[in-house]
Image 1 (cartoon, rainbow over the protein chains, first blue to last red):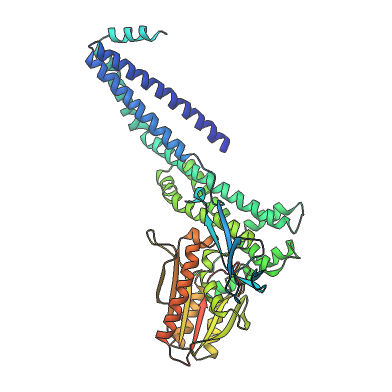
Image 2 (image 1 turned 180 degrees about the vertical axis):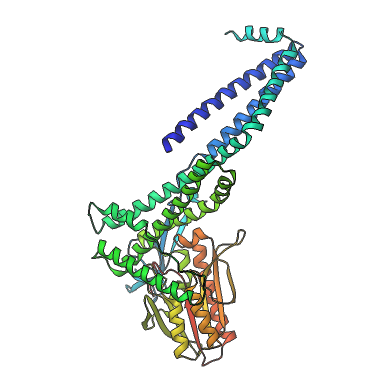
Length: 130
Length: 372
């Protein structure tokens, strides 16, 4: 299905680009017609050109927005907050496999007693925010 | 063709001719909308459903791959993929509720059978795995099953709609798709947490209970559920939570039943995560009365029954979060909510109980990544 989708996306994209080109050409014709005094014709061409531009840009915008995006769910960092219950020193570092809340972890750099993990939490990166 | 020539040809013709062309286009569009308008609308809706379905399929495939990756750390059997596919199609049939009397007991029994059977299946694939990791793996496979179910159901309605071209069928599928996608995304968020054993937002209740029971002696009160007795400002506090740090919800209903049957209790306080409404802040704390516990309702029923039988007031403290927050690694805002919930519980105990009373505190939720 993804390949079929990409193909149809490409076809519609090319059609819309053709419509944009045609619309611009119509607007060009409208300007020329106006300058030569054919006011009725100029209005007709400008309506056609503007409608074409609106329809094509709207369709393109919807297509691009709808194009399935890669999930950003994994774009966050996980931090482990440690605290020494003896001297109160606390430290934050990246999560390491095996960490769990209220589990014992690294040695305290001040008093060398084992620190306790108080929290494991995620920090969303800007790209990963939804 | 030279644009100047085209322009000359066009402008030399009468303006009426262009008006005629526009009129013809208008009539053609009008006829098209009469005869093919609904079909075109159906086609557009089907495309929307197809796009959503593709996203769910990718999420389902990612979950399946994550399960395989975790299992391959312990077992390199070439037939692992077919085993995982078999597990992903695992189902349970809820009991009949034509006669609702005793239906909770039947659900409880069937869920226990399902859990034991499921655990046995996983244990046979990875026999050397420790209990904590086994629980995480169970949760991971449950996510895979949920995503697989969602994909199959939405695919069914998509294909049925395509086959029958029924506007109402397709309309329903399209209308449901945003909420279904939200749920699927929340489940996808949970994959990383369960693969690595990180605490999730749903674990707030467990974390609060763990903070109260830290350092005290713990005993197993029912399967995967522990209890500890601590002293709090002259009150005897009995704290219940699921056994961590593996992915467990335990059996809080059974635990509360046992405690209330054996002890004289002044109050039961339950703390859990609650789904926030749009516009509410993540980590907001609220309190009320009742059994703060989700799930299918078995534990809630047991707690309510026991509380009614012994006339014990049920107090609830909840930390608000979205579905996605509840299933993915705990956010800092939720951790702040945990601190607030602890203060609220302390205040509640002081206000609602006397010195010398026995109070039960139940930390509800998945205790993955949370010890005690």
